[in-house]
Image (cartoon, rainbow over all chains, first blue to last red):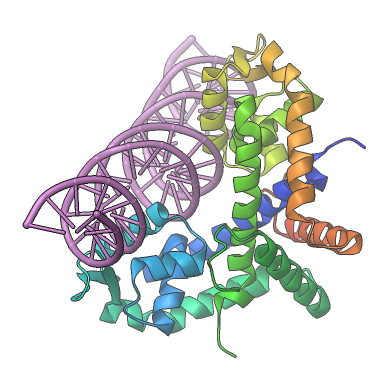
Length: 149
Length: 149
DNA sequence: TATTGTTGTATAGCTTGCTATGCAAGTGCT
DNA sequence: AGCACTTGCATAGCAAGCTATACAACAATA
């Protein structure tokens, strides 16, 4: 059986991810947010003051990627980084007022985007899709030391 | 109901796409290929000598992205671009010998990556996952003028 | 035929991902 | 105390996506 892009799950996954990303980018632009900051914000909205290392482990993102993302977030006034008192290597990440205020509108935008992009699927299919992705992620996480999703 | 990343399909799709991309990147590195060239190569292996515009329409990628990708491919000896004889604006894209020779090993690498990343799913689940992604793409394509997947 | 509009590519500049590498702060051993 | 090792983060440099804009070649029309 020959290989075509329309049947390659890797290709399809990339395409689907771009669809979601394009939609979300447009929706959160008015808030002054970009997609890359979203995962970090979600963690920090839950638990402010995490270390960079903790964020990396939670998000299955390379440390260097996280450092760059945090630098942009600091530049844009979403966070400040402060050295940990008891360990001079550790940077703790704290949300600004502005970032805290964005939690409601930003998550609303993400929920809207998910709903719209998946409007072509039934409720059952949406649930299947979600579960299948969770399984794939659980089985293929980058860091073995990471907590389960 | 509150919003968490582990239930946001957009977040999960991004994560799944990164998993496939990381795997494929490693597998095709020995061939001197990168993931971004893959979609264009798949089209050109089918039909050599396409125009840039045709590639853009087939792949649901921005024209500027395609122009950049083709520039890298030309730099790396995968393609050459030649002006169309009858229309001076049009660039036709032709594979080099090297690129033609990579068809077998490259598609094998992609199939292996797909199989490995999805080994956690049953055959049925893999089929469901594929079909669901195809539906999402069909309903959310960027270009209305594009051919159906 | 000259002007005006359209079309196909290219370029500039950004984000978000990656690998590889550097470096300062902590830890442990002798 | 001094040495090597480890750990947490930063930086350099690249790929691959995007938007906005420029530009040359063609098309259409007054």
